[in-house]
Length: 81
Image (cartoon, rainbow, N blue to C red; front, side, top):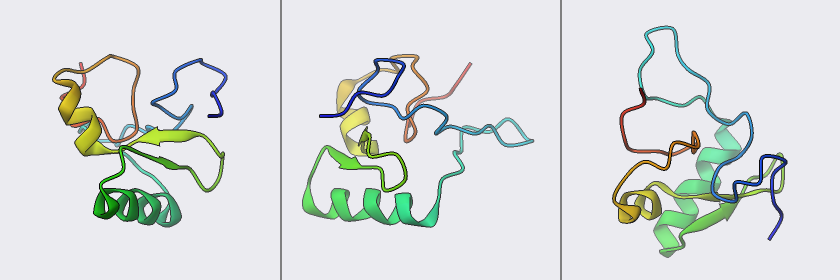
């Protein structure tokens, strides 16, 4: 498994881009969203980011953790402070 420079295996550095309305939504590429959706359909907990090669956790995997880790994970389902 390739580690991003931050050392956080479940988030991709720079993956979360805050929107002007400061919502919890992320801006990701069509290819990355497709990879996420394919992984979710297979029941996988992670997928390989097509642009960076990093392993990224899926939203269902993050929900299963039960709380936000605070690392800015791309598909974090929890509200961001």
